[in-house]
Length: 277
Length: 333
Image (tube, rainbow over all chains, first blue to last red; front, side):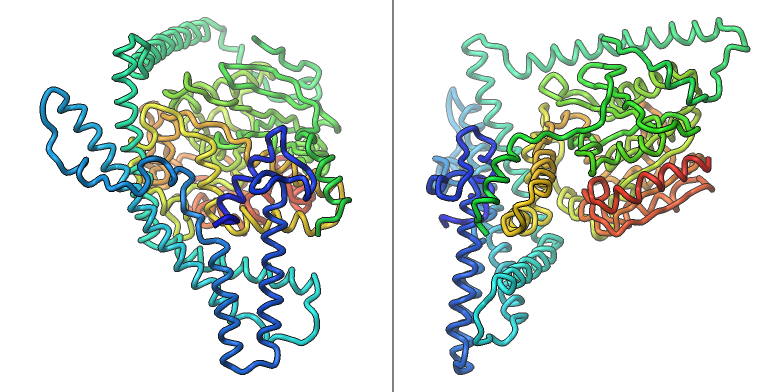
């Protein structure tokens, strides 16, 4: 899908780049700016007009066919939301079964096993993504059906911008309602969790491979830096604890009458605290 | 829809920045900055008010622009306002825990303010996740908090409408976080996924089909900047928060331990004002409402507003109603 929601989001996020164009005509194809949103709105308007033109004065069969076409259009517009941007990566769609299922042998056995775990994690990610995609497709089907059911009988009068806006908002309401039902469901929650868990596993195995290369090249590894950070943290905690002991000892030496005062806002505003570096 | 005026207004709004009230940095600790806002009205007779914002977004949402600033509203009521800016954690902060945020950073801010004012206790206003931090702090250090205000604060993380909670139940958070931080961009995607059609599509279409009104567009752009200005999350603190709160619901079950001490909400006997957004999609109202039955306070006030999560900070209605409500409640105590 050239105009799917995910790419629209990406295009919009790219507005932050200095090369972002401000005008509708200056946005490059598939590039930055509001063009994707304008395009989407115009496609929505065109599909709505087409639905109306095909329905006005038509038979029940013609109206049903037009509704089906309109419903298909809506599903098509938002079909690829859960298709992740890295779906086009080298491993995507590859048959990883042989790599995962064959036993690891020989001197590099441990490295082979790590690669197998990474490949398995990739398969699990793809599987979870397919489940999400299916649930999303079901959601869109449900949303489109609800939207078409809510449409009033087509009128022969022209569609005004206000009427189009109302239709668009109704579509969004239908879509969010259908999505909410899906998103709260157990299959969706499980698919999300499986996707995150598999990607965590894949990242862990990939990190282990990178650590190996870093060790071979005598570069600092993540593990090594973490160890140093933990030691530093332990030292900081010791220093804080000692400071706390000193503070308590100092407080214990103060005379009993030196307690803190009640607030006097007018006086306090005159003595704003000084910044400490 | 695509009038040249609209595009001109959008182009002009590209560089608008958030923030309007004058503030002074009064303390810092690592990446944390503590700010005190300059007063703009006759001081009210209340202790200083420390705003504890969430870790997951930037605190300037509290002071977005002149007509959309909770802080400005509080200053106009004569309150002495402080704000914590947690900063942007980086890889060096990956082992910073929730306990560090509460017992080192938040506590450090409170002590700094109390010391400079010569007081025993101050008023806390915790916002969203910052409300959870504030609840923990108040339960652990009741002598240092005079009054507690919680705003769109999750307390019971297992209510039926809590979508985030449902999503994370089966996630292996240890594996997700690993030894690193959690990317703010990932969290943005998660939040957008709560209402994808509205948040990723409808709001931009609504922007384009509205009037070429520069004030409206600049307001939109400031909110837009804030929404996507999401700091990475210190890995250890993120893991603590997701596992302890979202997965195990320890706060509501009085099973949360911070620095080896139990955070028992029943011990909260101080006055509490709980501000709830009835249309909040991020923190379900039921999650916040739970505080009333869990806290030990006999001076408990709940105020509900017909607003969403973000609307509670920046809507026109919030500007009119929330600061006076807070000021009046504090003045009565």
